[in-house]
Image (cartoon, rainbow, N blue to C red; front, side, top):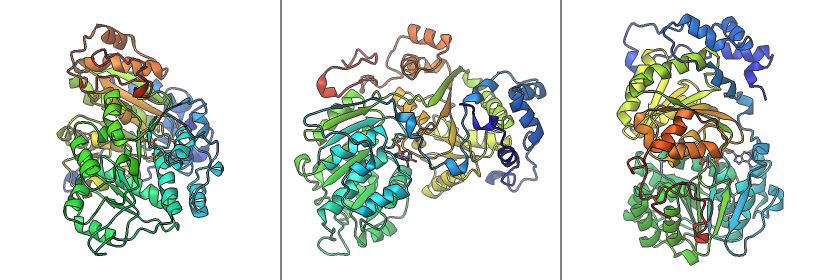
Length: 545
Ligand SMILES: Nc1ncnc2c1ncn2[C@@H]1O[C@H](COP(=O)(O)OP(=O)(O)OP(=O)(O)O)[C@@H](O)[C@H]1O
């Protein structure tokens, strides 16, 4: 399939070459008298010639004698999504995805949403209104399992529709119970949700809240969100109007429970999105406290739904404390990346990374593959590194913004908004943006710094190649990433990616010392099955198995 910019649509070219926004000036430069050099942008003729003649990267090379890398070819794989297509799911991309189910008495999957007996026509109508025409593989299996009242541990690739897979059954279940949730006791002081959805970041909680609200439109089901970093009083006020489904980050929820403003005693549905993250070292004590020590009914008296794209075996074991006779589902191989993403790994010494990134961005700009239809997400290791890179890019005329945990919530929201709407089509981020975020036009994820674990890599690159669309992921690999080489090669091999020989050599020669991989997880990232079967596909970590 040829990329959209090879089509003859003059309208498309005009649209893409005309600068849609006034030149962006980052805040810290607004009081300077500087003009950002935009000479490379807006040259419609040059760009079209370059693309059609297949010389786009060449043009750039000729103009820049210092250009050291030939990176133009990779943009053939970059998909630019036009806005009107942004909401459409390419369902056929998942036709081949195998789904494995294990556990006892597994309810059969469905092939269409119309086969599912939702508790209200309003919910079925909302699903149509959201343009959900056909269920994705994980939805085909997970929705009947959850609607049958069974506990579930579900693993499916990034961007393949896990949010709806837990939201639909929860909303339907609440409607089915026909149990209009009352604010218990003193109506002003205590909210008792019927469902609790926990997520690791504020942005992800907000996103789930927004999605769930669309699905529950005019059903009477009340969805409320609670997350840290924003004033608690407004969120408490929202609870006072009643809540059926509470979407929350763990810290803020504990705070509300301790203030006596939320009780979990009525919870019938507990969903953990990014469940492996919620149960890893960072969150586990808090989540355990919420689930086991704060009035939440025990596993047999509630329904528990765990979802993620990655599920290390050790986390599967930990999670079993929260489950009762659960069904395990794996759509695709556990922990694998989707083959909708073209993955590239380039060897770039640390000191050359900035120049390499600039060259990449210049080449992409020359190709016309930037802007709000082709957003670029750049992952770095540290918060300081994110700020520095943002500034550096802005100074070089690349409208960028940054998101990380040291920014106040308003700044984080502003950064995401300006990225989503294309005002700053480059977002420099730490892992705070690695999980769950669904931004439809992210065309390219660049791992400027590679993460320490392969699971983090899977989630990061999963910000592109979503809803059946293709995406591009480029990683800058340097000497210090050697401990990741083996996992990276294995992951890329599984996703039928081209693996450079030098990376294979790293994978063969690097002795895994445990610096780069989490010993705790045992590294069995690619456990292919339900851990209860004891029959794993070994992903290369002998420590654990
Ligand atoms: N059946 C469907 N039809 C149309 N669009 C869908 C369908 N299911 C999901 N989508 C859309 O696909 C996108 C990805 O879905 P979602 O965010 O739920 O993925 P995910 O599996 O949770 O990803 P991640 O692992 O990154 O959290 C969203 O924009 C969602 O609205």
